[in-house]
Image (tube, rainbow, N blue to C red; front, side, top):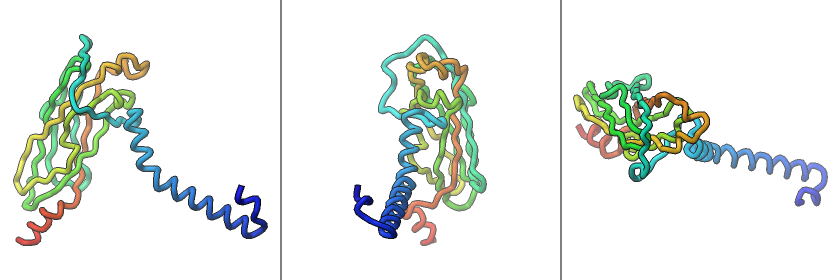
Length: 189
């Protein structure tokens, strides 16, 4: 090893620099690695995504509950259009959320989400969702935002998740900076 050739203070300095570089690298990589871990395992209620519906639809049903909230300071109004639906496992579901901007200025928002129980997160699959993109609402504007999804039939083989009587899909909208083109319009006025 390279450190065996060094003696005294040079060896200590080289080891210290190595530790600092290693720790910095781990800190830099921690967010993407944690995100990947959550998406693969469903840990923390993280969902999966797909380009289309499930090829298998079971006769067993599950209830999906919808929840919507706003982060502190977010002036929008935001709610699910239905509180709950029952679908067959593997069947594609479609739900809508309504968002309104009651202010006199354009506001951009980004939705964070999770699924409970956490064990079911890996089996909740979004096909299309408003949460995939930032949303900009003009003053007084209201929009209906869809989310299409299915519950992966593999949930029935999971020793913990298969006992979930219902799955709750929760979204929280956070205010974000306006995209540059929107901000330029506001400044121009």
